Image (tube, rainbow, N blue to C red; front, side, top):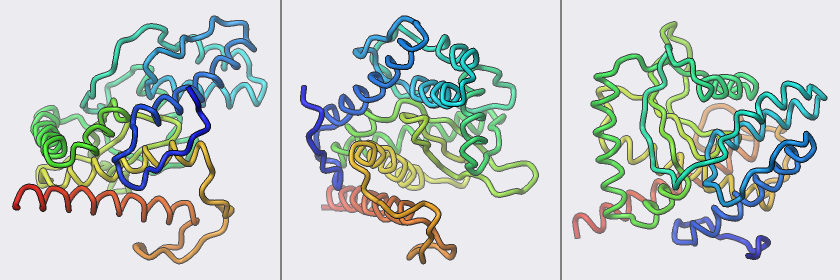
Length: 264
């Protein structure tokens, strides 16, 4: 398979599988180079790419660069070497979650200086909002099938979060390139199905754009240079402005398709 072809991700009517296989190939090539360096067994590129694998690849790479080799090996030894085609999982990220997955989420968010989040310890709220999210997915699958296919190919985990207990700023929704394939969403009883449609279109847009930008850097401006942002009060780096306008176009695309097909 050729891996040097370009993908037009402006609209979600491209080959999602081709884009996924390109990105997966690049991650596994880099990961196996790291594994061979440490004389560890390589991982099969045919294994479905999980967000945990992406996270371990990133964290182990950082430790390798800093010559903290024993720590890099510790993370690499956590790689899952067996698995089936992934299904989308929706689950709360709770304060009593001591799993390895929770550990790497917190590590990357802190190291990447992202906004934090509040844990979701309300199981009833999580169950109620999961119903809404599944309904939002059903609407997308029915009326915007290209976006539905994109979500199925790229998003494998949705973690539910809440507001912070101390009233500090928190992440209302988000993705992270180093945890590609997973998204966070803040849940609240006031949120509607339409709210979650917006979140799904928004965050899947970021996830798709990350594939394109990984293959061909789209914005060459220094991340230290900031510019007036058309949709925010604060100045932002150009890559942030580009991402914002890209996902806004995706959100408009999804709602436009729903309105036209549902009410025609």
